[in-house]
Image (cartoon, rainbow, N blue to C red; front, side, top):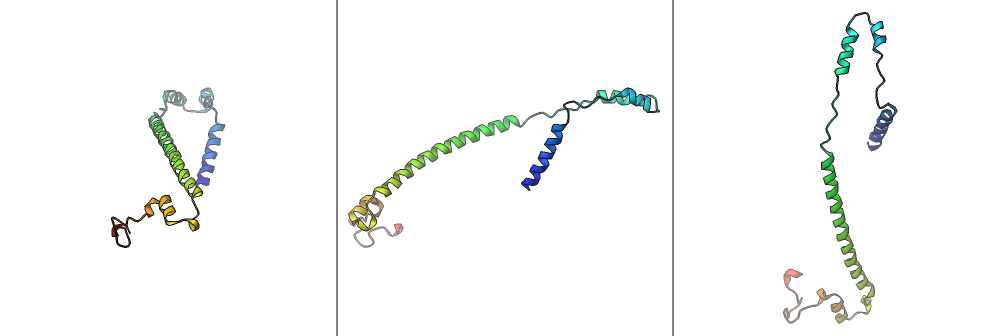
Length: 135
């Protein structure tokens, strides 16, 4: 569908580009001599010269510009937040790269590296040493 739209758009653009800026001038004298009814060409000429095609008023450019500015500020804020997340993730990754391998860790090393794994045997003296809601 996109390729079809692109093809049609390119065809219309090429056709518009091939047209001149101003339309060719009408030779009213030729039509006066060729048309048999007198006054008809003069009437057409008056109506043609009185015809004014209104140009559409641009009401959307300002709205689009504000949306573009808003989107660029949102994108810049997202980029900054992403850089902060990347820095945080790199710290965590560095922690994982520099820690003792799991097969060589003791329970104390595990609790030091991952404090959330430490069991509170004083507060919860019975197994599983955690509140049931946290399991």
